[in-house]
Length: 84
Figure 1 (cartoon, helix red, strand yellow):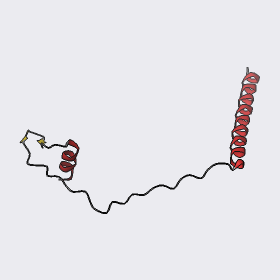
Figure 2 (tube, rainbow, N blue to C red; figure 1 turned 90 degrees about the vertical axis):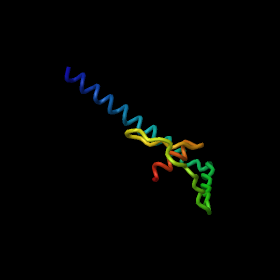
Figure 3 (cartoon, rainbow, N blue to C red; figure 1 turned 120 degrees about the horizontal axis):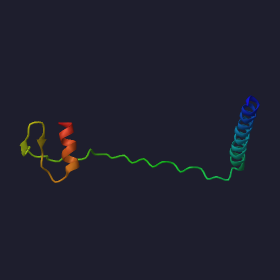
Figure 4 (cartoon, rainbow, N blue to C red; figure 1 turned 135 degrees about the vertical axis):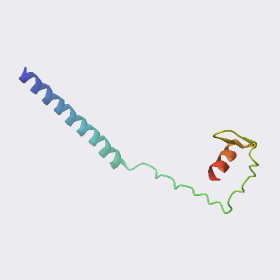
């Protein structure tokens, strides 16, 4: 029984080692080819003006734990309330 476990452990170790050698060889051969194109430079966009703020309006009604703000854009309303 102990010999069987030891043999299984040795076989598993050999398989892991062979897998490591295979993966290492793959990356070594891939890096030695050198036929890859360099990655493109990232494009940077700089906005000169800050975006104009929108008028959120007065809260329509307030409940016990919330305040409701009506507006045409729910995302802008939520951002305005979060920044208030």
